[in-house]
Image (cartoon, rainbow, N blue to C red; front, side, top):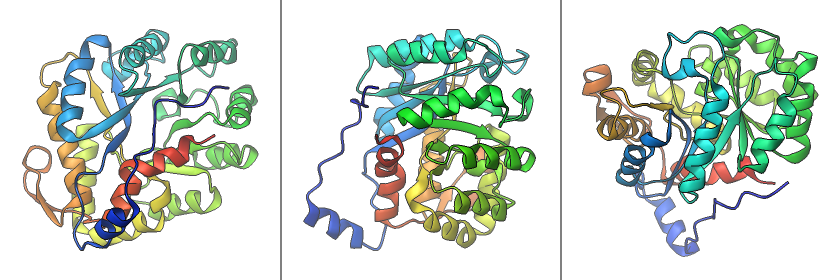
Length: 315
């Protein structure tokens, strides 16, 4: 399989990095890779690029999605192949800015052949939704998915796997035990920011498991920001404990709907950066008040923003 050519490690003078890492406050001008964005079509790429430039986001992983991601009224796992084509075309046009992850339907008997073709067309990873409650039509460890897991493990293809661990933890454990070398991101702390013992159990048992710091739709985001603000030291300890396996992500869903343009993307990115970088930050749009952040040290920010993603996709 081909290697990932679009990510090139930033060359930093060691003496400069050592000095910056020792500074007491966070350094805010690291390059950033957003590991979790959904986009409806090519026409939404310009506002996304504009927001990326203003936020200092060097590259973004685009996750292909079913229609329900963009319009909740669309029932079932539909129209994902059209979005596969869209993210592949966006990455083809902007190869230095985007990395496309395609998706597949676990019930499609031709899923492996289609996935191989998407890889030949430029896909650099796989996004799975079957751990989402509304798309959970078969067990995660269903034998029909083993050919996909085995293929990804064998060829070191990174997988971003949405799993609600509150409902499907044991199924997820079974997959990760059977395919221990498959590198997987379970985003949103595996939906376990309340049951952090469950999140730690997953991370401790599976060394190839990563997570990202995104929280999902607006209501989920508001709730999570409030939860982190009430007990920032608890979540700071958790981030420090797994600092080598946490990625930055916004879970932005970029559509042509009003209010989803460049300014909205800017505000969303600013909120996530403030959560990581600041002791206190204004969060008027999302939680209507002042919030406490994690105030992570510079060397941890660099891992989350930039270097952990290379470890995740490394061959």
